[in-house]
Length: 302
Image (tube, rainbow, N blue to C red; front, side, top):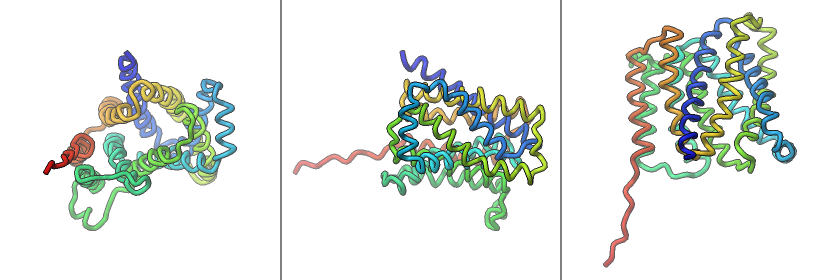
């Protein structure tokens, strides 16, 4: 019965998350990335803070004992991850960004090998290499010459950096074991991420001509902080509670599909040939890394 509520929550979560890419791309010419990042994190934290009121004492205790870790993890997983996405969307399609972000689980597996010492194995290694090849096809726009000469679109490189930060954030969360329920922990990390984003936003106010908040920026921010922020995080928490972290996280791939559909309907984007080829490599790599398992060795009886 729990799965009956968990799957719809997860699907809606990733649909709302996909909408963030569309809103950020739509407003990119008019609103700078760090301002978007700061206000989204701040408002989402403010919306969710009353909902986790039963955990306030535990949250305050955690901040007092492990403030530096909270800030570091929030900076990597929320400030840098989101800021890089918004930077990248100024120079690349939302569809391409969604495809590259599908690499995050593969990056998580590779980083877990080095940070947590988790075994990678043959199939995971092979899958990671194939997915990496897909990413290179997308970043180089299918141009082998550009790949050999290391001539890449900066927008796609920002998105690759964001996917790396999300993978590292996921691994650091597993290693840290903060001992707090997911939603109140997310609220703390949102606050920490907003704190780290503030200096970048202040710099933009004096140096970026897009810093004026207009109606389009307000509408995009309202969506990204509300339905695409607080509600999305709440639904993800519900899906993890009912489905478990592994199954809920695997549904992340729905985000890529939703981004492509919404970008086509709302932004008029279409898939490029290199997007399709790169996506095929990434999907193949993900399947090999996550579905195929090494055969268990059986002890021989002499």
